[in-house]
Image (tube, rainbow, N blue to C red; front, side, top):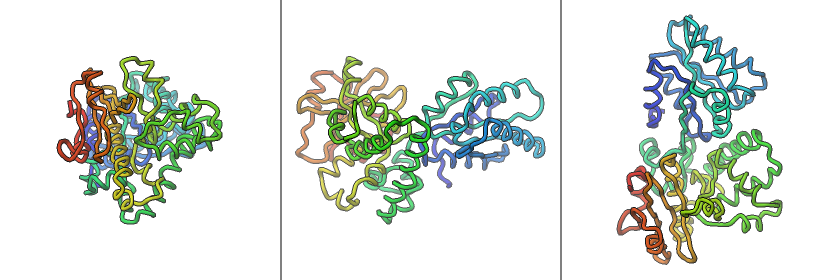
Length: 392
């Protein structure tokens, strides 16, 4: 693939420096982590070796063997070697072995191996590196693709981004919607749930977690309490279990619950979640209706657009940018953004009959700015074309 995501250039620069820290790359499946590494290996500065630990049943000796082979390759070819290990979290006690190998080569003469570690579970990766690799790594958290990246790579329209979401590998199938849906559900969603959630965590009720995922995804862009969700899930016994399962789905890059904006942190945590898929392909693939039927229905299309904007905001989310929603009585603001101690209210208004809560929100919280996305001012098509930090 010729298109390179911006993170490629940042990691390339780090790899060319003398400070050979371990580069840790995590993020959801099918967002281009492996492609990124293969693109880095095309550079002539080094020899690249890519191995995958997915399905590895051996003990940690497998890791040591891969490392020793990389050392041998460096001696034979007289080139620096980068060893990229994918799905590293699948190897038991991986972080302790990586720490020892890294420390040993720091004091050894001769060839040294630059390590890149990749994984599809942020939570498992974070646990491993925080236990053993403090001071030895740099971490990169890759997100789902943005509309601007997809537009440059695949020339898609804003409307296609709303429906087909942001899995680059599925873009070639968008001409056949049923085939596209089948691919997203079977090859992407099912793989993530099976390999990254059920296989790597102790899930007491896997059927309940699947139902929560499906229901929460179809409600993307809507506020719904755990209590009401429980009413539709017969297996659910308490809200704590549902909240835990939702945390796991968020770590897998699938589904999350936005908290209500409030000055009091306790009120944020106790609020009903606003359900939000992290990639709109998830919502569309689970929805029985096709693109033409959905885009012709203003109310349904409004939900899809709002969900796509939520996914766009989440793709840019970071420690400096936080995302909430707000509602009170009949007043609602779709998204509340916090950046550098400034607050913005953002309302998506597709249909004329939607009641906006911006005035009430503005009166109560005195935000830095408020935006209503409509055809007269800033449009949703414009918003998904830039980093939301630019709104500030």
